[in-house]
Length: 302
Ligand code: PSU
Ligand code: MN
Image (cartoon, rainbow, N blue to C red; front, side, top):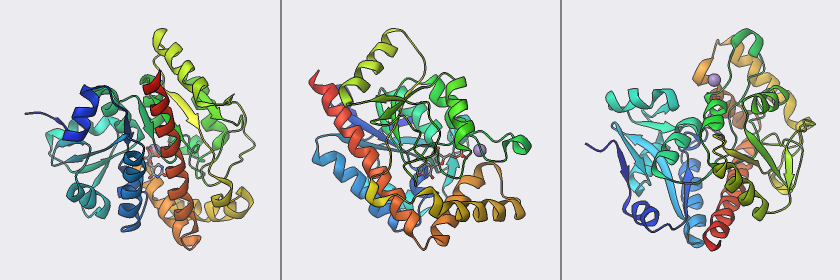
């Protein structure tokens, strides 16, 4: 039995070398409430199709990895009644045990790489958690990004993380980290973090050239492209820092940790900002998808 099933559309596009953009599903199942998750997913896919890019949303349904979801599957993943959050280390388990699950950045990267997709757009990546000294909690996203050579577009590490330590982890793990028109690491809801260290690129051409050189040299890491949230949707750090602190404190008091921590914090921040952070999350992800589309279309012309 095939453990990876490509939708007709994705299969055709990959066979004929047409642009395909990988999209993750944990952002839908755990990162956003329903029905906003589904509205976002449809918008994201529409944005791709409008520019002749095939969207490949990845998820696991009853032990089969689907690359490209039909409407029914997309809806059930977004509704998330029994959808597990599946990271890269759990892929084999999910298949053997016939789980239904969403894929995080680490597992989406693995599957996209396996089927030959070159570009992946997400919201925010995982990284080093604030109380890492006690918990040792560093997202598998970092390890996967250091081992799989795709172009990954993100609006920065999620603001719930220790941004400075995440930048250091990116560096230590040998991830090629570019900033699209910036050298400061954006922090998901906010454009600024006061943490520098990205190599600034002015345009898409530079991103593609760096990607091609890394591939030639067999550098194993992704090209991580940080693309700050658009100005009109950003929540500046000073407006969100107390809310993040409060959410982190609550998680600690309730002993929420490991893979439950990120979804808990994101959802709690949506409540504490009366939905404002959800809107920002949606817009930054769409902005990343738009950049991914432009990269793919430029690559196709080369
Ligand atoms: N970005 C979002 N919302 C999310 C996530 C990222 O805007 O829900 C998910 C991604 O799938 C990412 C995961 O890979 O959170 C990281 O979880 P953890 O910190 O447990 O590794
Ligand atoms: Mn973690």
